[in-house]
Image 1: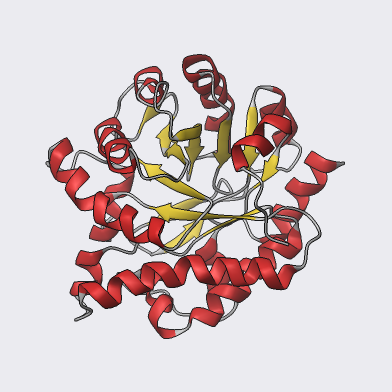
Image 2 (image 1 turned 90 degrees about the vertical axis):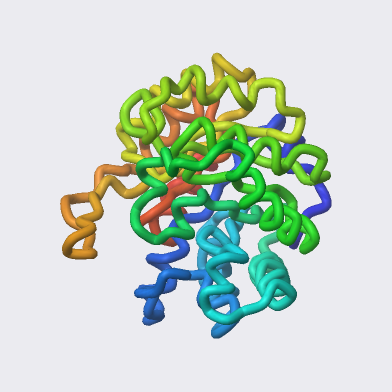
Length: 302
């Protein structure tokens, strides 16, 4: 079942399980994502594939589905000849696909849809989301993000996932864009060690969200599992809000070879320590599939 319960209330009551990586689940199902729009391409071409991917995570034990809108933007769609009206519809498709998966799941527990608002760098499709510092002002970044936020809000998600944010300046722009939107949000940085990918101390980066009433959780995603524990402690201490964490598997991405290498270091047992330190939304990002989410759910509910 889907839920009319507030996600914020659920976080106050306990821990919520997030899903895993959308791209690896789609690739495992045979879909080619070698495209600048990445999984957002399927919003127009094969929305049923997104429903199936979300459904696999709900059946694995996830309580929250994060939509396939991470790399979606009006500018990116325009590059494919898709006008603004149709692009706005495709943002809505991302939310409806997750809703349909929740309906089909028949989980017997509350399920939520988080509309992904990825960073500006994702639209560039050149790895900039892992560097930040795009050379744009906070105002310019806000003008990029605001129409995306508005299109997603119009589709009625339960929460906005401001995710994989590499730079505190972009976080400031995103927080401006969601102000007064009427939908709660979480803010999640991608980090390296104790700093954002752009090099800002996490204390400063998290502090931006401390007084933002729209923000129901802060934390990290798309990072090494080893970077999570320190971030959880800082996020909770600086903001007093619940913490969200969904790291990668621990493998590393070789941009030249366009392939993952190394070994996975994310073990489900780690989540209990994160939970004890204040993490309340816990899941996986790149290379963490339904089996990994099932293990996370089992550890947290066991």
